[in-house]
Length: 380
Image 1 (tube, rainbow, N blue to C red):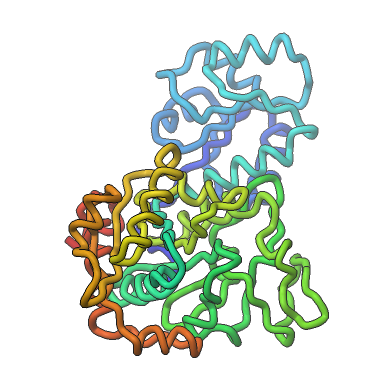
Image 2 (cartoon, rainbow, N blue to C red):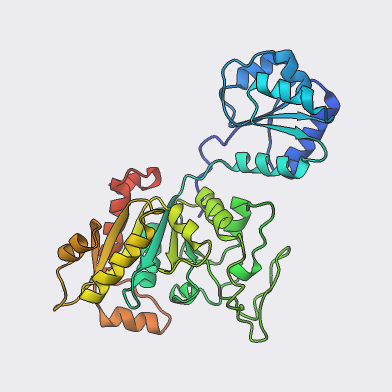
């Protein structure tokens, strides 16, 4: 379930006195699937100037405006004639961020209008890093998604760990049709939020973007395959180059919560998953190896991470979780009780969210609520 559309959407303002230029701008807005507000004169521009999320104004109307009501960001100056000196002068007077010349820059302008029409990302991004094998990070990721949906949040799980658990299997979605990482094509550095969200496999309200692709699932139109003869994605190609950042940004526009399963060794752009997070969740075990691993990961991510919280998987003879938190150091968000039944469920490709695991997931979500993230406010 995507974010509610009950609130008014973003406003994209297109303004030009030249009818031909305005027609060009309208055509590009239609290509971006955005219904804009139109301004044909100075008074209309002034009326919407402070309210619009993006203003695209023709050079003719910009010169007639002389001086904008107030200086603001996200203003673009457009013309069909590349008189760069005159356009730059007008842009400075208008306070425009960019000068757009049609048709040369039309693809870039479509991307800007589409992004503004979808709004800025408002979903909470939660990267989860297992500091050592067997800590239970993937199990916790799946449980968080289930719990989030149970309390009324829209949630998507993103598998960014090529060495981790198959999250679609863990969530019992391996046979669900939908888009996987090898099918994703990133154009112009961005992805449309709603079409991406609608294309993902989902079950019981949880959506997932992962690597696995059953051989008998047809590819969606406009996607590409990178599968071997067995139907499994090639290990080197399942996460497309440059795909993680736009995917996370798009999903944060479509869902209340984006939970990422991130490897502790952070290959390539996986570091972005941590940098984009509202909160970093470290999962480790209550023993000396777990402490040492968590300390190394925390130090490695200190330069790029948002505030970190710790989840400690406990055993009867292990180190006290509060002591683990002091040694890492990172505030303790929750404990995860070691349960052989949960481990067995994961090994069989199933996830039964037992009461102890559900309590842990609730505590982590409550930590997000305490941090003040708007979609989580109802969990306080």
